[in-house]
Length: 151
Image 1 (cartoon, one colour):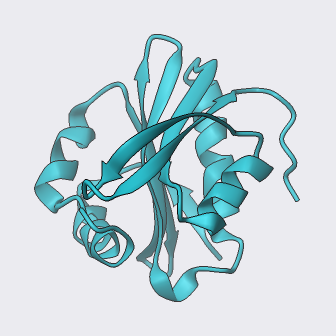
Image 2 (cartoon, one colour; image 1 turned 180 degrees about the horizontal axis):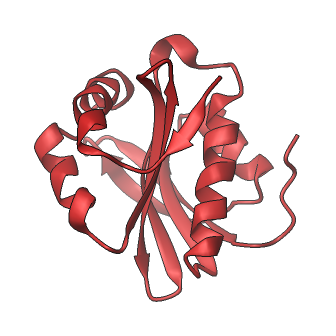
Image 3 (tube, one colour; image 1 turned 90 degrees about the horizontal axis):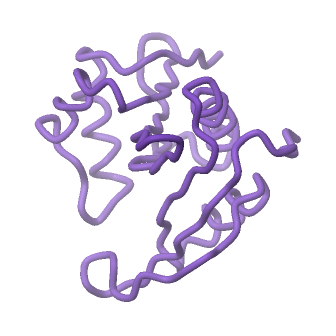
């Protein structure tokens, strides 16, 4: 069973490994290090049997949140873990006083786009050639606290 925890130094190596399998431009351990001491960085790390399965994080700016990372280990995708992870992250955001939250997602990542839409996110813009200077990103927003379909 996956349990959600806050970001800890002991998780960083595993998170960097998941980044490499999930993204074209992955974060390294060193890129995650400042997040540990940033009072406006919030993370949900899904751990099962001592191993990181998923994680997501956002930065709070006043009453808004900017989601920086959302990843599920490759061998655990398609099991509803991403949905549980996002619901946990949105709970954290609400508790941190975030009213609206945003993220960018590669326009070709249909699974992620559909997940975010099912949670109530709407596409409010496009960043051209945002990923690897090749792929467009949808800019999606959600008003935190609105009724979310948890099924």
